[in-house]
Length: 276
Image (cartoon, rainbow, N blue to C red; front, side):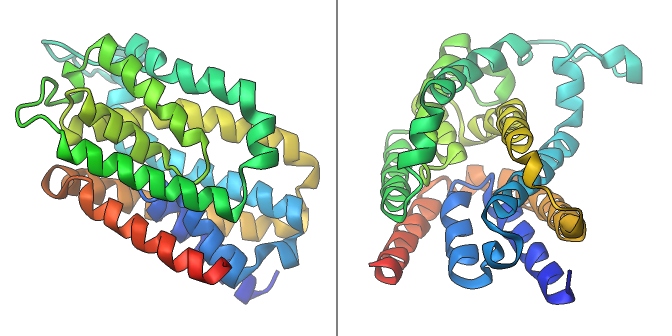
């Protein structure tokens, strides 16, 4: 494994970390950076390259756990283990997170093979990027000036289920899971910050589950020689996801979704002229 290849792993981890939780579609960016520039499949092989993308996703997930660790402790009822007192008043419940996860989990299991076989093309990713941008523009246009749920602790089961249903759109590559769920939350009467918090919290179990299953399926393609490449990508994804999450959470209530939607439309135009 050469220094140049390690540098490529760091760049891919950077792309994953910066785009996984922003509503811009990490899939579209990985296609743009890897398929057009870095070509990891050429020196890793197709299956190991796919496994690598799963491993760096786990780095991004770890970043969410670090940022929201107190929240996860509270959700799992482990407060006493770290001598943390449970705050008074309404709190986000684990059951609400589960309600939000069920729709996409069911649809994902039912249509996983179809999605893998038919939807991972340049054309479908461009469609997903564009439709996701449209949803984000609609969400900003019809966002409530005085949202019912200003914080994630104020969301209802109905809102959690609605966000979960809208999250199903993100099974279409390029649509963006965070773009779909934040837009859905805003349309259902949540503030942008509350919707973003709920999105990140839901990301951990759903992404960990999907990444874990994919990693097990591709474990036979794991090469010992590629371990430095995998480690570099994992660390890079973790560090840049950590930066991205903290920055995005401070930004989202100020700028809303429109700038990200415009960026996605520009990306669609760029990708269209590159591939077609």
